[in-house]
Image (cartoon, rainbow, N blue to C red; front, side, top):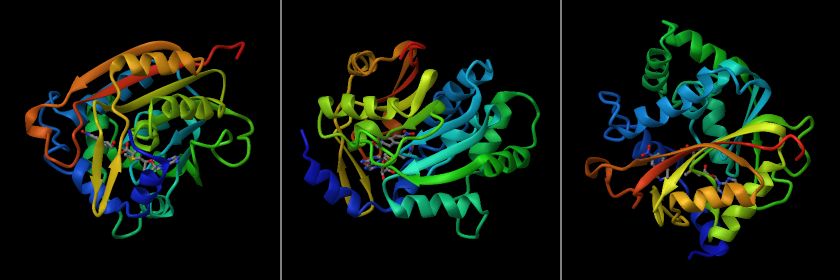
Length: 265
Ligand SMILES: C[S@@+](CC[C@H](N)C(=O)[O-])C[C@H]1O[C@@H](n2cnc3c(N)ncnc32)[C@H](O)[C@@H]1O
Ligand SMILES: O=[N+]([O-])c1ccc2c(c1)CN[C@@H](CO)C2
C-alpha cells in the first residue's frame, strides 16, 4: 500500500528516457516472437481495432506517458487522437515525436511490426504520417480528479485508451476504481474502453524515480470495470517470462481489457 505523497514524490523524478529504455528497447522490445510482451500487446490492440467496431471522431489516451505504440492500431479509426499525461516532461517527449524532431524516440520498429500484423501491406511511413496527422492534442491530466482534464471534454470521447496508467498512479485498489470512474466520465455512453496494465506489480523504476504500483489480479480488473459501470467485452492476460523480468519492476503479467460504457450511462 503506497501513499499519495510517495506517488507525487516519485513522479517528480520520473525520467521519460529511462522509462523508454526500460520498457521499449530490447529485451522487452523484442519483435522476433509472438511469445514476447510487446508483440502480445500490439496484437491485442490490432485485433481489437481490426473489426472496425470501435471507431468515431475522438479517442482519448489516458496517461500516454512518452509512448505512442498504444495508438498505432487505434489511429486508423478516429479522426482525432487526444494524448494526455500528468507530467510536462512526457507531454514534451510526445510533442518531439509528433513533430518529427531530432532526438525523439524511434518508434519505427513498433510501427513496422503493427503494419506487418495488420496485414494490409501498408508502408510504415504511411501509418507514422497518419498518426502524426491525427494526434491533434497533448493535454495535462490527473485521473484522481473527477474532471481529469480540469474541464469536461465536449463532446465526450468515442473511445478511451489507457496503458499502464491507473494502477501505476493509484495508492490502492479503491483509488484505482475511483480513477477508472473519473476517466469513464470522459467517454460517451456506448463508447469503448481499451485498457492495458500491469498485473501483480508493486513498483517500477524510471531513472531516479521508484514508483509504487497497486498490485492487481485479473479479478481486480474485472471488479473495477464493473464497479465503474463498464460492461466487460474481453479480458486477456499475459504472464511475463523470466527473460523479461529485468529488474526494472516486479511485474508478473499484463492484462488487456476491452469494455463498453452502457448506452443509458
Ligand atoms: C507507467 S507510465 C505509462 C505510460 C504509457 N501509457 C505506456 O503504455 O507505457 C504511467 C504514466 O502515468 C502518468 N501519471 C502519473 N500520475 C498521473 C495522474 N495523477 N493522472 C494521470 N496520469 C498520471 C505518468 O506521468 C506516466 O506517464
Ligand atoms: O512489458 N512491458 O511491455 C511493459 C511495458 C510497460 C510497463 C511494464 C511492462 C510494467 N511496468 C509498467 C509501469 O507500471 C510499465
